[in-house]
Each structure stands twice: as C-alpha cells, then as structure tokens.
Image 1 (cartoon, rainbow, N blue to C red):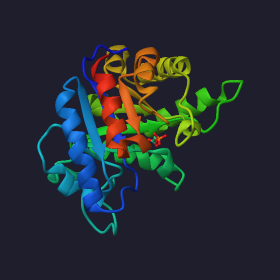
Image 2 (cartoon, helix red, strand yellow; image 1 turned 180 degrees about the horizontal axis):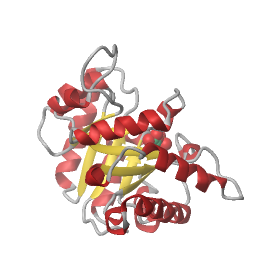
Image 3 (cartoon, rainbow, N blue to C red; image 1 turned 120 degrees about the vertical axis):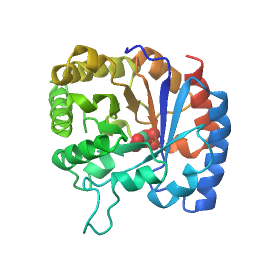
Amino acid sequence: MAKRSKKILIGNWKMNPETLSGAKEIVRSVRASAKLSTKVTTVICPPFPYLSSIAQGGNSIKIGAQNVFFENRGAFTGEVSPSMLITLGVSYVIIGHSERRRLGETDDVIAKKALASAQYGLKVVLCIGETTRDENGDYLRAIEAQLSGSLAKFSKKHVSNLIVAYEPVWAIGAEKAMDEREVHETTIFIRKILSNLYGRNEAAAIPILYGGSVAPDNASDIVKKGEVNGLLVGRESLNPKNFGMIMKGLNSI
Ligand code: PGA
C-alpha cells in the first residue's frame, strides 16, 4: 500500500436525501464524528442543490460533487462547470460512477471531465469497476480498458489530483461487499496499470479506494486486508451513526 497516513472516506449520497433540512441534519452529525477522526479525510458528496449550504460550516470535512461538465462556461443547458463547484467550496468530484456510465457516459466523456476537473484544481475521484467477474479473467481486461480510456487525457502533471475508486459494479447496492483478498489482488492490478501509465513512484502515490456495500462490520477489514487507502460509501453514508462508525474504524487503523 502507498505510504500515506490519512485514510480517505468518501460518502456518495447519490440522489438523497429528499430535503435540504434532511441533508443538513446528516452533515451536522458527520462533522461531529469527523472532528474526532483526525486521521481520516472525510469527503461528503451531496446532490448539486445542497452543495452551497453544506459547504458552509468549517473544514472538518471536505465537500465533493457527484458530477461535473468538461467545459467551464457557455451554452450547455443543465451542466455545472469545475469553476462553479470551486466557488462553492467544493474540492472533490466523483467522475465515472457506474450509475452515470449506465446512463450513457462513455470513457471519452469521463476522460474530458477528469482532465477539466484536474486543470481547475479539483481532486478527481475516478470510479472504475467490472460489471461481472468471470473465470477466465475478462474482468481484468475490462478494468484495464476502463482505466486507460478514462485516463486517456490525464497527464502525469495532474496525477497528484487523482484518486481511483475501485467499485465492482456487482458489489454496489448489494448484500455483501467484495472479499478482502480479491480487493487486494485487484488493487495490485490497478496499481500496475497506473504504473504503466504514469511511472512507478507516481502510481505508488495515487490513493486507491474500494467501494461497494461497505458497512461498519466490513469497513476496517477491507482497508487493512484489502490494503486500500480508503473507502467510497453509498447507502451507509446517509446513516450518520453507521458512517461515524466506519470513520472511527478507519481512524484507528
Ligand atoms: P453502496 O454504494 O455503498 O450503497 O454499495 C457504493 C457506491 O455506489 O458508490
């Protein structure tokens, strides 16, 4: 594992909760936990309309967006640019989540978004992961193709802004997370591809996170035995008590 003292814990709220007051309530509790977990960088990614309000309230947590556009201004109805996010106090952005890929987002679009975000100084949380696991290793080729396609425009110069979130699609919203041993094996493979793209030392410094059905009872083991630098959490990030437990677990590793 890359030597890095702080673990990264990202909460992806997806299209939840339904109200701003609900969002504020969750974040109040997350901030309280984060103040006690100084060895963890906690990032909350709420839906766009809540970003501004959630970003106000100190720097015990970082704020991330769940998407961004690759142009910075202009006639792009409905899109949000990297600079707009930055003016709100956003410093991270999730790019290429499987739920967006399922809506038609291609590696090419993801590559443009990743580049534009890094150019404006956002930390890019690039999501990759196979849809299914097969016996003959096709999933490894799928991961490799996705990673190199999504990073096609991302130069070595911006690598310090890159975080890779490995999320096997079949483990997202599932009953069980991936086995820690498999997490470890796959992240070694991912780091090897990153090393081919950017060089060994650069690749060693890129945080690799795991995501997919992370819960308080598996979080610490996934990080320790899976040797990842942190976690991307969906459902449990909306439950402040459980998210706080996950955070506490990472803080004591
Ligand atoms: P989950 O979602 O933790 O609910 O499985 C993870 C994700 O989609 O990032």
